[in-house]
Image 1: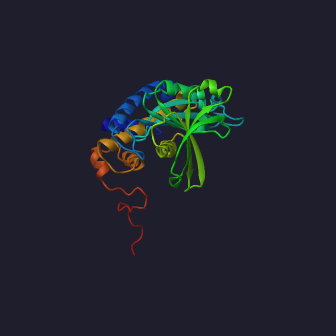
Image 2 (image 1 turned 120 degrees about the horizontal axis):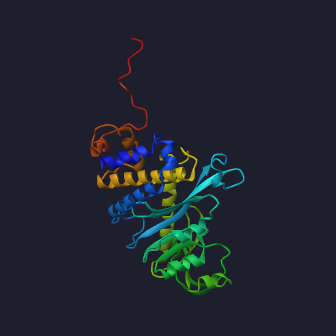
Image 3 (image 1 turned 120 degrees about the vertical axis):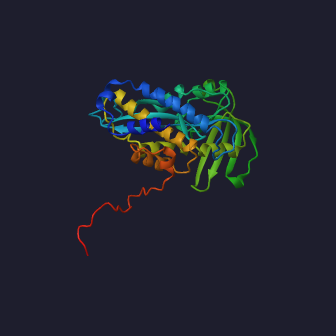
Length: 322
């Protein structure tokens, strides 16, 4: 484990040569990350999250990493800039990214929905930008459940409704059928439409799902968990240097992103196996400053470090005596 963590953290540093980024296939690091992802998901399989749910719950979303158009012309996104996208499927048990699809910025988010592996019985939570009734019907035929925010211009007819408790934020719980000339063909079976008002932010949400068993409030709570993937994107950008790249080729960019994902998963594995209560960012800092010390990981992580930079060193000599 020490060797694996040391390998992962060192890859995140600047000492990774440009030659390797240019010539070594990014799929080597992707395969390595997938092995670690399987291990991490086994470790966190029994963990709970904000919603009491027996089935596996996934969140799917996309983040954009801006690039310089001059250096990355192959990833042109707008007229004057380039970008790549990380389409990420995250397991809510442990917040482990279990599927990542990297594309140029021009690729529409909804097209990446076709790449997601469908697991029977699992829940997939998505924002309204992924509204593709043809693909959503694939989830239904695959015996999986989806929860997606509905668009305002949805053309539908109400078939039936259930009484809801408005004191907890619910506004309606309906069974609907799509009426659009295309949507009714692409998704020919009934849907469940739930309206929920979040008083804390004074905003109303409308969800579509193919699950008719879970309580309406549980559906709303599951959608709220979608923000966990946003926190993952924020964490990996701030801590693992994927805003600045050390190579300009497609291979270099994908290599660096997969290395960052590898390090994130490695830190999550260490945290779980050693039963450490420290945040992931703090564990990463400790590993980075003690990488070349001959200290067992469990001992290094059990020590108290001042990570604020306010510690006083006693190795500095006094310039004047008073």
